[in-house]
Length: 85
Image (tube, rainbow, N blue to C red):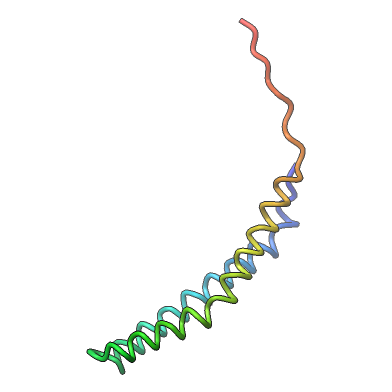
């Protein structure tokens, strides 16, 4: 049986990481719209900064997701169901 209470902190952390990545993405889009309208170099540079700053968060997000998946993988498989007709 999977203990969901045990996974609750990991799920909350995963949600916080996703929210932070989304916040940074919205900030980058707002900056490009406000300061770099029509300036391709600024646009390219600002999005590169976003991807570089968000990469550690994405790696951490993947790590947390792997921990959750590993936990589910360690659970005992349910007994097979045999149907006789």
